[in-house]
Every structure is written in structure tokens, then in C-alpha cells.
Length: 471
Length: 75
Image 1: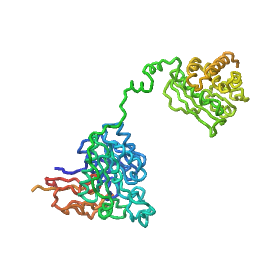
Image 2: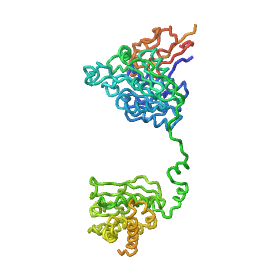
Image 3: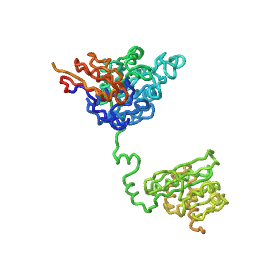
Image 4: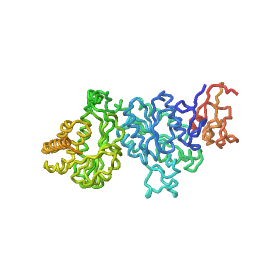
């Protein structure tokens, strides 16, 4: 009868070192392999292989996904508990395991682990503490003991220079939320079997929705401790276990913890929340005009209302049931500097809001025309504010229109309305949406209501100008 | 009395000797041969195995050791 064999949660073959390989990439005598085996056994025993998602750290165990036949997410350095939080809250039925080393968890990821523990996230965190940075070649870790020699503390860790080793289990034990905190060791067979129990407990806590479980495992790193596997285990027991007390810090049952997730919404509820009715969806399918992807760039001085008019245009597109994006671009300067807005109006889903080659360029000042004239799509349109742009469009493969907008706006008594005049002209010219839409949207986008009326007249002026326009 | 034994796959052993040290019945020794990875691997020799599984748990490799309990080793 087989009593112990390679757990099923492992892959049969580890592809990392090429086909046919059955060994891990860990150094001989490394504690990680043992911890892996214990976790894999727990997964097997609970029959949860298909539910498990590992949050892989940065460090030696970055390659966890080569070994465990489960789900994996490779997390940014130290952020595994944050990633685990997101996964667990979205996939309530999954078993999320964050496996981290001392550099990852107690160094760069200190904030993430403390806050995940403090929120009492329903996850299991396995913290393998070997008191050294293994993967990078043996530098001092936050958990390196006083006097311990590493690459960066060649004369031993000195508290006055390097600070003191951090006891993570004790630190997390000051928080209220965690339900299970234990420090174990894989220094010998007895403690390894205790570790096995703790690991199983942590995972079953999660399965039973009890809350945050933390298991710290003291583990040997023979290569970086510059010892053989046997001596490293002796050193672990004589030194690490002395400073880091191996014991259970907390094992409480505070009852079933709710998942802390916002309720799932079906499509209808989601649309209602976003104030988009299903009717709107249908209307969108019956757009009056097929325009494809229509790209507009409005450029001018800061203060000319470029951004506001860009938003206005995007809102008009939206009101006319198209998909729209608006992307502002400010110069390094504020008022008086160059600024431009990119607007995409489309009857399809928009891939990118960036407009490199506009179909329509609205040049409100001379530098804008100079900068963007050559970018305009062949056969495109350039509308020039001829009041302040003396230059003519030199390209022959685009259509140019000259609107003395600033002058017309001054006549109306509001210089800033120039862009609105051009927008009305643009609407008539391209027919992307009727001018009525512009009139409908305009009052909503002007904050100071006393300017609504003059802007409405600006729209009329732009419309009239188009009707009388002669090329 | 039923016999116990382990199968120790020398091709995936890194020769760290942790199992040799941990075995309560001194059943595992280090072989004089070297495997393809270049390690002097461990091998099971002594028939006093009690099938406790200690070697399995201390071994850092997932698939090196399989422990058989109450079963005659088929030669």
C-alpha cells in the first residue's frame, strides 16, 4: 500500500528545465520543496485542486506555476496579498493562497500584508522565512538575525546600522482581524509535521470562510547560509527558532466571515446603475448614419475653450447615440499655451482614444495649423479660424474651410464662443449629428447659465455662416 | 510481519542527505554513484523500514520518495 507519494496537486512533469524533468529548480536542501509538498498534500486531502489560485511572489518561488497544477497569478513584488484580495472578493468560491518569502512579504510588501490582515481578508498566506534574500544571491533581509553574515552585512547584521529583525507573526498578532497565526519550522521531521497541520488549518479556515490565516514557516537556505543541508537545519533550530519563537499565536473562530464583496449585478441592474437603459442599446443599433470611426482634433491656445468644446463635441456624439471618447492634451503651459483635444466618434467600439491622423482638424490658432496640418488624413477636412490664422492650408489633398470665428464671436460679445461657432459649422459640414443636437447639449455643458443664450446665438451664427459659405 | 519499504528515485535526487540524517532506522544511505544532474544521490538499503514517512516529509523534492507500508517490495 502506498502511504506517501508525490501529491496529485503537482504536475507530473515540471517543464521549467525542459521536457522530462521531475525536479524543482530549488537548490539541494532548500526548504521550499518541503513546504510545497505540504501544501500540495493539503490540497489533495481537501480535494480542492480545481479551486486553488496561487498568488505567486517575486523571489525563488516566482516559478510556483511550474509545479502546482492549479491556478496562478504572478503578482508584482510584495503585492500578492493585494492581488489575493481582489481575486477572493471576485471569485468567492476559489481558494486563494498567497505564498511569499521574507523579502517579498516583510520587505517591499509590508504594507500589503498588514492591510490585508487588518481587513481580515479570507485568504491563506504562507510566509516562508529563511532570513535572507535567496534569489538575488544572499543579501540581508528584514528578518536576518543580528550578527548574521550576508552579502550586504559581511561583518554581521548590526542593529545600529541595519535595524532589528522583524517578527512578522508577532506584528500581525497585534491586529484584531486575523483568525489564525502560527509560526512553524521545517527544521526537522517533527516540526515539519506540525507545519503540515498548520497549513491544512489555514486552508480549511479559508474553505470554511473563517477569515485571514497566516502561517510563517522558518525554512533553511543552505546555499546562501553557506552550509550544507544538514548543518543549515541545525543552524535553523539553534538560531532562527531561538529568535523566532515557534508557536501558535492565535487560533480563534469568529464565525463565518462575509465575503466583503459588492453584490453581483446582472446586465439590467448594471445598465440601470450606469443610467443606460437597454432601450438605448437598441437605439444605438439603429443609428441614422454609418460614420465608421470619425476622428477629430481641436487645437488652439489654452483659454480658447478647446477642452470645453471637445467635451461638448463628445457629448453631442453621445447624444446622437454614437460611442465617443475625449482625450485632452495640455502643453507644459496653462493659459496661453498650446492645447488640443482628441475626439473619436464611432458607431463601433472605440479601440483607442488617441488621434494620430484626424479626419477633421479644427485649427483655432496658427501654431496648431502648422503643427497638425500634415497629420490630417488624405481627403480630410481642415477648419481654420481665419480671424487669427493668416496662413492658408498648403496641402492640396485635404479640404480647407476658413471661418472668421473669433471676429464673429466678438460681434456676439463673447470671444470664447468662437469655438462653438466652428463646432456648429463642423456639424453642418460633416453631418455627423444635426445642429439641433448641439443646441440640446449646449445648455448642459455651460456652467454659467448667463452665457447659454449667447452660445445659442453662436450656434445660429455658425449655421448661417455655413449656409452662406462660398469656397 | 509485514514489510515496509520506500522507492527512492535516484535520478531526481539532489543528494542533500536530509533523509539520510532524518531516518530513525538508518535505512537510507548515500550511493557512491552520481546521477545525471551530477549529484551523489541517496538510496534505500536497510530492510528495517517502519514506513513512518519521515523521509518523505523532510525530502525537499516533490517526487523523489514514495513510501510503501505493509507491502513486500517486489524485486
